Image (cartoon, rainbow, N blue to C red; front, side, top):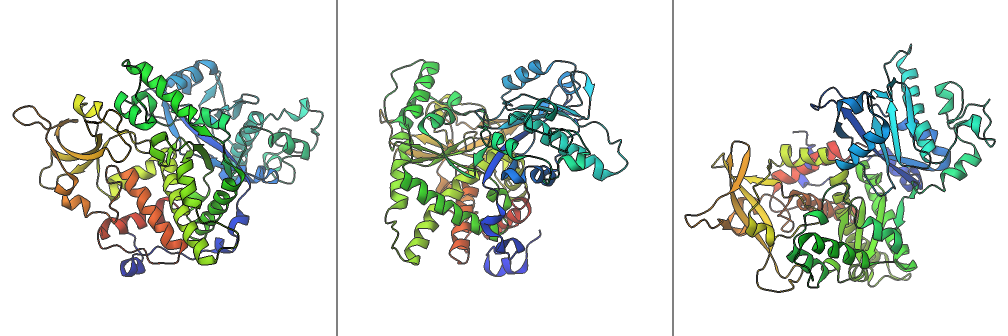
Length: 538
């Protein structure tokens, strides 16, 4: 395990880096999010070529003040789609059915294929003023690898330009075609050179696109009503049960039909969305900038390069708890009021630091949940390789399902705790609603139950007693697990454990304190090492 010596002494994560001097000036004011989709054959093998020269693409758009956020690639297994044997509309239709198209028309979805409409690359196709792109990079037939990279960067940057409303230079009287341009002719290297890539007219057009977001964005009520229903990254509303909907909306659901109940729940979630006021925007923006300084100073690039997108809701929704959906952080009025209480222009630095520490701790906690969705394989490494969880799909039991609480930040209950004394036995932590109240109260009527799960080949089933009752324990009954981590909250899911741990780490870094715990030293050290390896890579 790669652990610096002073980790062992102090359990503190602090790294001096050159970017410290640059601070916030190193970040572009606007962000464009790209979801790469890699086409493979039907068996999940032989992927199309996918190379993304991020630095070159960013340089091509640097005059526009735009930074690209390339999410972790996802995979689409379809031989005919990969090889251009079916048309683009059919490919998109199939991808939508598989829930591969991400975002609410605010993210560029970029398919990497071997051919487009039967034609091999290098070439691309993009929907003008849309959010869909197809890229076929072809083979490297260039005399140097540098030229090949320049070609890759140009093709990607060029097609993104079409999504951003840019026409070919030859078709646009506002762009000179005899000068190298991202939409014109010339050597690949020159066309992506920031000296030539975009003119002022093109920059003004780009910045009008709904795909371009400020680094910190507060969604309006109208925007939030759409975004809060986002299930493109993972299912949520489509898996809810009636009792948990009742708890989330603090109101009895007037339908016994599950489909109607879920639709009712969706409408209630939408109705809760409200606008931020100017003071809230000002304080949260200030807090985000303070968070960014700490992240930059410690080279935690996976988070500081991520957009900060906020939805505000009324306090009755989900008990007022902060949570996330897709790439959005959802804050309730109650939560905001509590976090910014005491904020004023004349307060001393100590009070300001304490407020920012708490608010920043919440913000990075929620941002971790966004990263868990968009860089899933990185967190899989943490949970499987560093923390030794087991992933498994447990057979559904009616008693659990009807009383479940689907955590919006960890909706898929797929992580099992290994029983060190029995290879085929695991512990499965689930949060359930108390059975008695008609309208369960968020938090108060929650209970964590630990079910014993047995493995049969690749299948997992909850263990039952002789009377066919589900066997369960309390969290306190598996003391080794409770003592495995330095946090006491969020033990129902590693998504929550990692978010709580990172929140405490941030606060230690921000306040220049040691990140120390009396328990869970091994997993704390492995977490710090994982951050050093995985959260410093874009």
